Structures are given as C-alpha cells and as structure tokens.
Amino acid sequence: VIHVQGPVSRQASVRYYEESWPRLEKYVKELKDLNPGWHIHLQKTPQENRFRRLYIGFKMNMEVLKEAGNDVYGIDACHSKHVFAKGMQVHIMVGRSGANRNVVLAISLDTTEDNASYEYFARESKKMGLMQLFEVDRGFVKNKPALFSDGMKGVTQVIQEWGNSVHHM
Image (cartoon, rainbow, N blue to C red; front, side, top):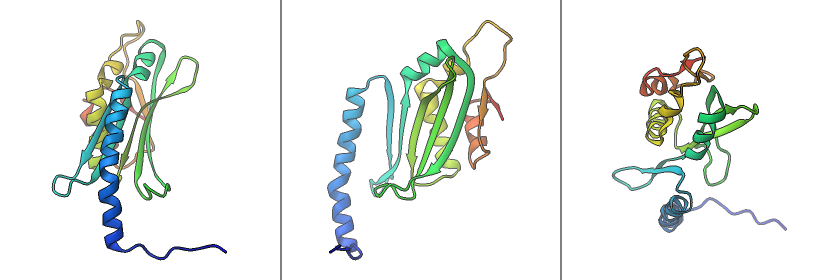
C-alpha cells in the first residue's frame, strides 16, 4: 500500500520553513569555515528574512586556471527539479583547463532567472576576484577571454558588471 500525503497546510509549511531556515544559515557558516578558499554569500530578503540567493565561488579553481587556463569560459542557467529547490534557477560558470576539461568557477542558486540574478552572480564573481583571472598576461597576443553563453536573459548585465573585460560569443 502506498500512502500519498495530501496538500500541506500553509501553517505546516511556515513551521517547516521556520525550523529549516536557521539550519541553512548554519550550513552556510560551516561551508565557509571548512572551505576558506571558497567565496560564499547567502542573500536574504530584507523584510521577511527569507532565502533569496546563494553564491559559491571556487577561488582555488580560479588559481588553477590562472596558470593552466585557455581563456575560454561558459556561463549558463537551468531550473532545478529537486524537491527542496523546485523551480529555482542554478547559475554556473566554467572555464577550460589546459587538459581540455571543464573547471567549475562558480555556482549560484536563485529564486528566479532575471537581470537581477545575473547582476548578483556577476557582482559576487567580481568580489571573488574573477577580474584577476581575466587580466592574466599569458605572454602572447593580448586578447580578451571568450565567454560563451546561450544569450540568456541577463548576460549583458554580466558583461557590463565585468567592465567588458571578456568577449561575449
């Protein structure tokens, strides 16, 4: 016999959120403490103190790409189907290593995919130090790194935030 639970009441949903939210903040703090080479930022809504966005940038991967990168990057977003993050947007940026492998530079989880979500992603990437990666002198013809995307909603905001330091393709 399979038991199917009916719709959850609003009161139960609020109670679950109130119990779970402090755990999320605790997990983010633990992530920061255990991974000093990561840039982690949790953004909450100002009035309700609810989840808005989470950014995780991998500084150590950026350092690897400074030495062994191909100056080719990709950025994209997709929606999550996970039961806890259903409908949320996952943003990701990768670079290509000298061994022709993808190296994840940053990910974020956002409630929506819009201009503001990409501005947030770009701003947090900049805080992580991403501009240093784009300005590496590789000793050959000076050129901007290439950033590939599918032309998603907020890519122009990303390029503007980064001061046109990448060539968008």
